[in-house]
Image (cartoon, rainbow, N blue to C red):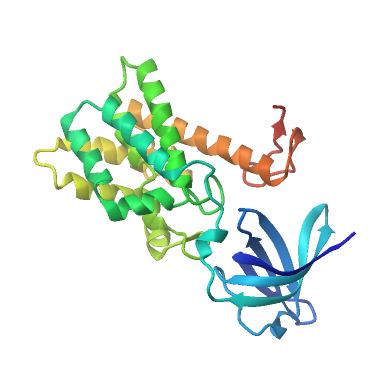
Length: 305
């Protein structure tokens, strides 16, 4: 049985405008609600709308909820743009407390890092209020892993905690201080690569340069403020950021060439993939059993816990 909804509030998270074979305009949208849920929607004859809908618009929606190819979809009859709503209320968010995560990551780094120059580098970052604000609220990706407000911080905290364990296990081969600062900064360029104001999208900087180079540029700016910062450390840290995707075809200009860079690549990839698995299970509401086929991962996923 179909369910009617009237004047329900959503934000347009994604939008695709197209025309049918008989040249009628229509919209496909992904809408987000205040609980973080995402809803696929379609609207035919969209030229009857009183406004030109865009990504990031908050709208009141009239629609019928239908089952389409085994998935729920909103067949939209009308949308009205709402001017006085906060977009951030409609963005998906981390389930963890943001300030608690900031405190935890800073506490770990303060207690584990011993090198005075690397401590200064970390303190410059946490003392940069404008940059830290972006770091706290930015997603880690547009739509792959940790794609929600606070996702970058959540992912970075997880990678830092994994780095501590790996550095302790491989203590004979690893410079723990360098691995930890690499874990902190590996994705920091995403604060400039992504824009969360109207839903998640790439900035011009992100499209032109990307978060690896943007991150190195930010870190080198901090390093320039530290007298006699070891040049070898500067290039090792830069290398970890540049190589953490692991392979040239995945966007890294260099493959990992230090033990720290190799470890960082694997723990970053592992944390991102596990989050992706759990996100797919959540979106498909799977308690146990198989997911649908995921084109990005090129496989179905099995949940047994």
